[in-house]
Image 1: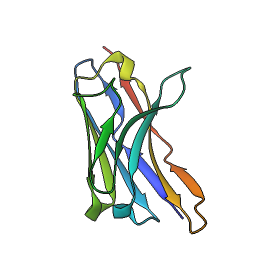
Image 2: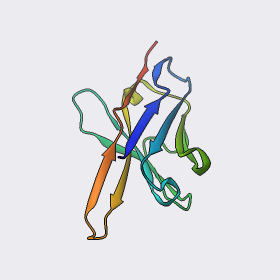
Image 3: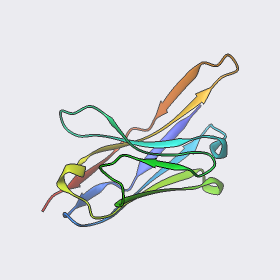
Image 4: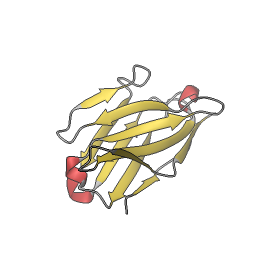
Length: 120
């Protein structure tokens, strides 16, 4: 059974930093791309950043230069370091991965999310 468990959210002032963590189980973590999504109140869920199994990354324009994703395959964990946080970064942040079965069917897996609130 695949499980993704996020942690690290909280309340931070504008300009502050937070580090989110997502620990996975039930998958061959080192072979999986990992993603962080976020969903702000009354907005659609959006992709924030992806890290491939090889370590390649792709960031949304809104977070480039401020957020950094990293992965520790030995710990089955992906991290999101968020610096220079803005009120518009306020959202529930979700960890995501997907698995392709032998029939090429793709299943997405999601964590329950962790709330980040940027406010003074």
